[in-house]
Every structure is written in C-alpha cells, then in structure tokens.
Length: 213
Image 1 (cartoon, rainbow, N blue to C red):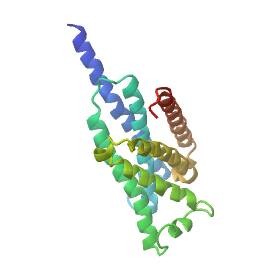
Image 2 (image 1 turned 135 degrees about the horizontal axis):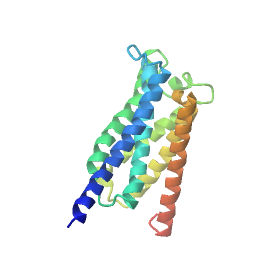
Image 3 (image 1 turned 90 degrees about the vertical axis):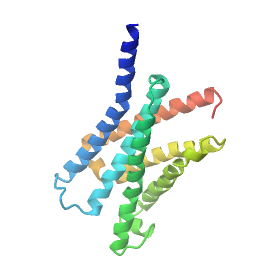
Image 4 (image 1 turned 30 degrees about the horizontal axis):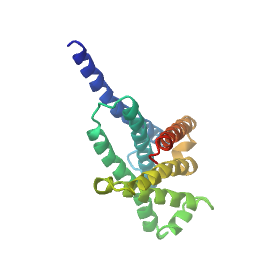
C-alpha cells in the first residue's frame, strides 16, 4: 500500500518534466533574443520581432521530440495529452507568424511577395534557405491534419516529412538566424541539432528493426 503514494508522486513529478523542458528552452530563446536587442523592446520593428517566433517554434518542437523519446521509454504511464495540445497551439501560432510577419513587412516595404522579397532580404544565394523554411512550414501545417487522418496508412509519410522538416529548420536557423551569431546560443543550437539527429537515428533504427517503417 505504501508503494502506491510513492508511485503516484513519481508519475506526477514525471508529468512536470515536459513542461519544465519546454519552459527552459523557451526561456533560452527569449533571453538570447532580448539580449541581442539590448533589452530595448519597447519600439521594435517587425524585422526585429519575427526571429524570436522561429526560435520558439523550433525550440518547443525540439522539446516535443525529446518528450516523445522519454514517453516511449520512461513516461509510458503519464498522460501528456494536455501538454502536447497547448504547446502545439503555441508552435502553430509561431510557425505561422514567423514567416507571415516577414512576408507582410517586405510587401509593405515595396519588395513584393516571395520568392523575390526573400531574395532581396538575405545575402545573394541564400534565398533558397528561406524557401526551405517555407516548405517546412507547409509540412508542419499538414501535420495539423492528424486529427482526421492519423489512422490512414499513408499518414506515416507525413511524419517522415515532418522529421525532414525539423532538420531543414535546424539548418535554416543555423544559416540565417540572427541570434545564432551569439556564441553560447550557437552551441545550444548545435546541441538541439545533434540530439535531434540522435533521436531520429534511434527512432528509425527501431522502426527498421521492427519492420514498422
């Protein structure tokens, strides 16, 4: 009988881990963004605001992947439905606003619509990386259809595309992210990328091993 309260405490504590992880990575993104703007946040332009939304979107999605790993291996009895639902709303809003604000401001400034507006915003030859981000956005939006199609046999290909999009966004941020010029956060970004890659390799290894791929 004494073991039940202990087990209950462990499960309750374990359910806090995903929220804590998401809070930490979100705080890191907000901190590096704020410090890179010298914390003068009262009169920021859209060009200064939209980057933090990309940082938040990727960071929270990374925490989703890490939570998925722990759920499969350590948190099997923990109900994380509300965690994924509410943080998913934040990610959806961020991935819509991140490119959306840039597209709006470039159009307002007279540079037209993508891809031309992208080409005139980044260094020559880098426009394709911005388009890579847009393609990844469409992939993530397609994933939102899981409520209706997750049981279809072809849904696994949407998941594969989402995994590829995560790697694409990692590269997108590495090449174009303003805050990635901050040395300590660049190492944090490398950690995100390497741990994500390790998770994907492990995940696909298990799928191939169990012939579920």
